[in-house]
Image: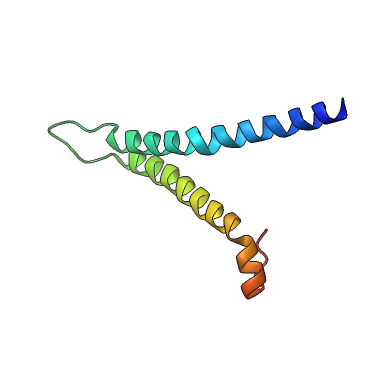
Length: 87
């Protein structure tokens, strides 16, 4: 029974991370693109300041998540080669 509860505990964590990074980041990027297009017309193709701010926040979160993922993957190499302990 302990094995089953441990496996189910690990499973929901994997599913959650998969949803966040597998579908959440592309959806957040799409939301940023949609935010840039909000309020534009054929006569006025420029984005509104609120749309640009919303897009900047969405794109910043995506870039930070990508950089954090790369650093997480290379943490062992950075620790052993350069003595940099990030996580």
